[in-house]
Amino acid sequence: VVKDGEVFEWKESDKYKTLKVEAGGKLVLNPGTFIAKELILDRKSAVEFTKPGEATQVVAMDFLNWRTEIINEDLPLVARGFKLITYMQSERLYTLGINWAGTLYAPKSYVVFGQASNKLMYGRFYADIAIVHQRTKVVRVDYDPIVPEVVPEEDEEEEEQEPVEGEG
Image (cartoon, rainbow, N blue to C red; front, side, top):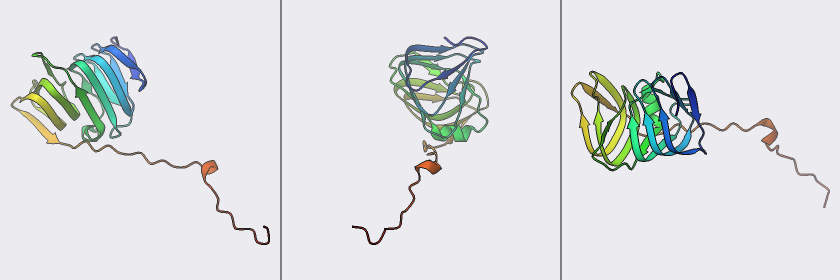
């Protein structure tokens, strides 16, 4: 449990039965794939992407409650690299937070978008049932993560050698 005032950086290799971020807590995500059986992000909690636009996938296997705020400024860039996946199957409905950026894949879920007024959401959505409230604008942003350039270090560069004549 991440409490008010705490910051938690989720490591890619760490898997959780339940991960909960309470109001005032912050979840930091690096690029990678993150898995939890249950993911609960309360209202007034925050999510920050360290490298917005790079491939970041979060999988909530059995339960998802996403009522958090993405605090990065460039939401269309976040949307390009973020994918949230859940296989939650129930009559429970959950809502996305005060803003949204990313691709949501929730094939068995009932999802409500934009319960607060004048919401602007970026991304794409796939759900069993999806409700979009009035005064909610959805801007399509495809999942197309940025692939970071790998710059070879000088030590790793192979120098071409001239063939030596007369040996052999």
